[in-house]
Image (tube, rainbow, N blue to C red; front, top):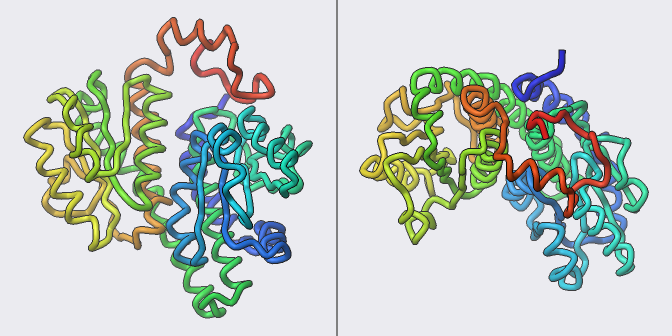
Length: 371
């Protein structure tokens, strides 16, 4: 029997713990190259879920490493940014290792005389034929193209990479602090199954809200802005319901105007003093527009029927490792209860024409969309 998105969501904690337990081993090649080449920052080149995995990990990486971490979509990098990033370690990211735009970025790096690195989720991929170094981030099997386990494991791998690099550089990272950070990463992973069950609980209580045809708007900031972006992508590509992500405050500066009472809002709290109060205030104010306002938060101003909660909380940097599971599970539940991955006939025509292919190989994933 073929696995579903939900199967891979439930497998995620084991994968994350494996990455954390073998952090030094799995990230060694990248750490060694960074140090040997004397890089002074990192540039990630990625699209879709891979881009969002980098976006989630970026705040913690900057916190540990004290350097700039750039992130570009491959097309933009190749055509507009490749000559503007001196002394950056350029790392392309593609779970399949066969995304055509990522392969183009690797070729452009080679042509420019720069070293190229690629993070992949499978050993059998076309990126290996181009990149100077290809590293598997150890996601394991994931045959459903609407990846879930892949994006969370990528974020965890990058957090571990930053931890190992900081330790190797001696950046305020002695053995005691290192072991403390490892324990804290594992504490975040422990909350992931709880978040999955919360998604089931709240969805079952409010099924009509989550299966209506209004837009889905996801709001957050900081580390969980990447969570919101990935949640919006997952909901849109599976349920084919319009889903958008915004920085919470920025949403008030224009994007709010098309909102209607039919829309569903999900606000993701960062568990921090700096931004959480404002985001919860925005969430409560949005009730004047729609009754379908939900938070991923332990804030008591929301009733339990409209809040996805965990018994414990972590710092904002690690919270996406479990909070994303809520949105991934909602995506699965919403899709199974509505269109079951069936896009508009025009989309099927577009995909079958294959005029602008996004993968260098066919049949990489299950065809859930009956294309």
